[in-house]
Length: 97
Image 1 (cartoon, rainbow, N blue to C red):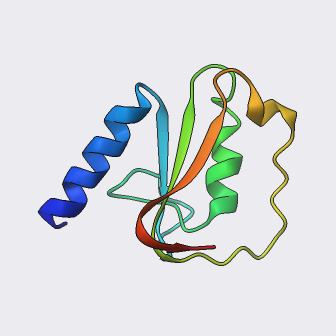
Image 2 (image 1 turned 30 degrees about the vertical axis):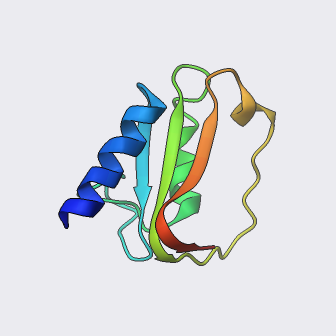
């Protein structure tokens, strides 16, 4: 991991405060725990995994640089907008969904 990328991750995480973070690069494995070193393969897996924490703690889903393909429609209903809800955002300059 480059120093610039590592600093970007550190800044973004510190701005979000304490939250559950899941990471999704264009290539990963859905059997992984969703950490930066072992990211999920899909946005769908990250949103499904986040439901256990919604309302209890904030959840951030970080889309790492690259093109992310979504094969199914993602349904984000009202439970995802709780006071400690869900944030999905790109991490880096070149993130496409």
